[in-house]
Length: 227
Image (cartoon, rainbow, N blue to C red; front, side, top):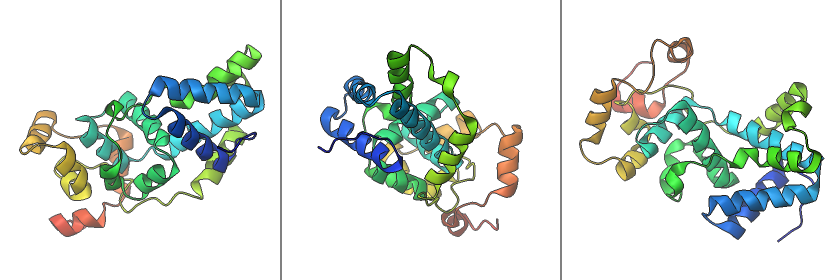
């Protein structure tokens, strides 16, 4: 196992892979291992980890991925999707990047801990406070964070239609393998009829996305949609 002394976009994922190798599916051990390594590296690297973790979590805020999470979690709230994206990061670079290119690829991901991992993005914060006695938000530099987020996004290939907020009836065409894995026969009807829709259609954000984002070609082909 290689020793990491500086956190950048590559060593961030190396550290995640090492934690996964050492701790497997034990989230408490995973987080403690990360915190210990970041304390060893010092406050500057704890800060770098914090920026990277939150930038990758922000980059995964896509409605198509949220639809996938809703299938996997039997519905997914705002907080649930936040924790889901922490879980996605914990799966490592390959799974993370594949999911943003095609959320249906998560049908191959390991199914554990209800696909939630709340503490992972906060390990930089915990290590920083342990080292300095200060909370990390006191050092937050918005310009530095935005620059890093733009840099990280250069490695991400977003899949066709991932920015569209799909209703339940569109979901089987968009993520068919996930539906086959997580939904029992007849369950889609229960979800669609019981919750009306996946989204609050009165939300300005959702209305804007429905008006401007493109649906996946898979749905257009399956349902004959024109947009």
